[in-house]
View 1 (cartoon, rainbow, N blue to C red):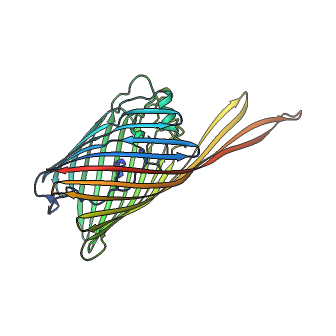
View 2 (tube, one colour):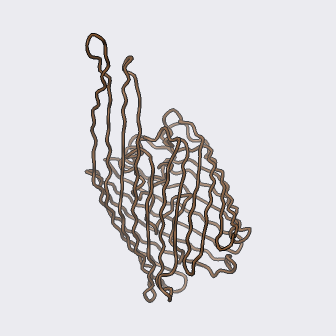
Length: 404
């Protein structure tokens, strides 16, 4: 639960947010005419997922049951999603429902979209001490946990996207404004106040391949709420690149890959109790294959993620300064496999399994001034400590999609 937005999930499952990196849609995709759907279709997806991680000696277990409804038509698109979740970690637990999100897209023309969206605050909207401890036991962006979306208030927002063909490429521009509604008066919460976003991307087409590069920037204004607010402040710069296209002439194999990098700025409160390490720079690469074998579609995925950060605090012991510095880093390598099993033309069942490994580590340095001799000369003495814990885990899930 941070500006970097709820741990980046495996390619097939995500999405993070404003810089969504997703696989080419196969379930419920429509024939395209000049970039627009030709008729109205709806898709209802019911899912169940179980995740189990071990970070050092701490066991983390989560179950989630996401529900998503999508509508696609020539001029309108809509989406509603949410998920009941349960998390147990570090001898504490938290149960609830992630924010129920809704979005309506008005398609002005192919490539130009005006979106109105919002979310209902999570349940619970604020966290108590035990719930904060449970999230903090695994609060790093390199692990996929739906529970990191708990403790978030309601929000409303509007976004515009525009496309401009320039020769053989397409330039895309976007702008958005969001407002988190006032948070509750007590409890730990992740509140971003007012946020503005802007972005640009360039897309090129070469045969069956599509290449895209993008850049986005966001900044938020929010009060610390006397230390209750887990939003670290500031904003973030995001860079991305992606490619997708058919691997063979028959189109029975499809590849999609991307790379991204997110660098926060002005995040002065980045060391929060809902995070295992302070919020910092976050990046990764991912790839997937879509392999058609008869009626089945197999999807192997690989994702490599890396996060690094630093935080410091300067205090005075009398008139002598004392500084505490914390450096953290984490990485993970995840691999998954899913298969789409169709039942008729309207129903698809998709089981998925995966495993992840990595490391999370921190180094704590405390520098204290000591007065030596009759001259009162101050000598700085630094003590260091830290840990480096292995990360291991697995996940499994089952999704049922109905199109009508």
